[in-house]
Length: 384
Image (tube, rainbow, N blue to C red):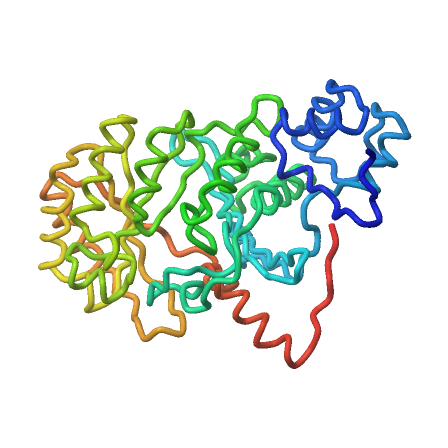
């Protein structure tokens, strides 16, 4: 029986893998080979208008318009940093929930090429309540679908395709016109939304579609031990980042409530097993909170905690963004001293450059600002 488009919700095609799309078309009496044509339009041509898909029969294009959609399309706000290296959108979902997504553009350094990295949200809100995170202070609304995750990447892919980016002040460098990396470090806990996140990553990784290499994808987690173990068994070589932020159970439990359920001993055991299964390095995200976790004592404890992982551990030091919580950003001398302790113990580390402070680029900040202003005035809707 043919689905009744007047009573059935539209199918978001961005939520379907190629085999699922083939089955969806077959159920409607369409040839399965049309799925590859559709995948090409969605992920290679980056088309979001069915009427423009010229090699599909008119009858199919009309039916797609009636029964399907191509992700959420309402952008409530789009901001660009002054140097245009950071761009942020506030995306409204079909039920009115708001999520943020950020494009970070990096000029070439040495022999490396320019990079375009999308920081993707996986949930509206977050259930884990980390005290230094604006999203964690919101509470949890719901999981994002695979299509809602994929849509964030495609929005910026279309933007770069339309206007390739070249870093100001670097004449002669090649413009970048495509997304090179994605990090699931936006709003939400990706491994709490495990099924939809893995579905989205497989869709973006598909060689018939967007074709982004798995090693250019990073999944971040607050430390959901069972999900880390499950991820280690997936046939998808994505990168893993652990939001660590403290080297002792006492301090970590104060800032990250999840530590009471999965203490450091269990988390580190899961990381060791992950490394043994994948032979891949794990990045440990460490938000530096001035006077809280950035002391020499905690630097020493962090080095001791990670030493058993040897070359498979890398620390990403992140000066805290100021949110509603009462944390301060450490100065450059404190950051340098903390990093030197890690180096002295053979722990590789880097410091994340501050990006997009002028556009509230830290996850959750733009949504909070928008919702506060929404009560006073309605911002215009931008539909790409």
